[in-house]
Length: 67
Image 1 (cartoon, rainbow, N blue to C red):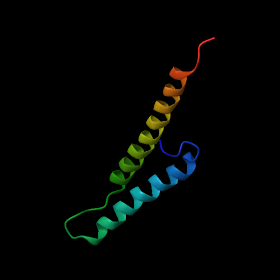
Image 2: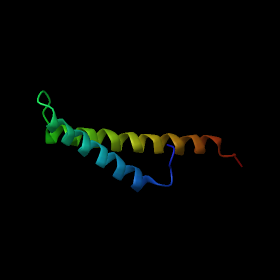
Image 3: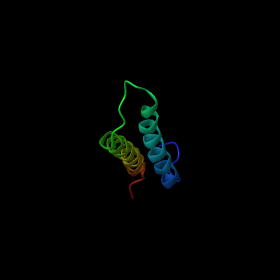
């Protein structure tokens, strides 16, 4: 919601963060990196970005002056 005009950049950041978190789990012996976990993290991040966009859109639409 903080960067409404930079959605592609935010989505790239979400993707990179999710992949990085999964890859970092390979460094610890008690954690297991799984592709499905990474996909779930990416999907959650993308849904969160679009939920934020929807909130901003609805807020603007609600405050739009009626003719």
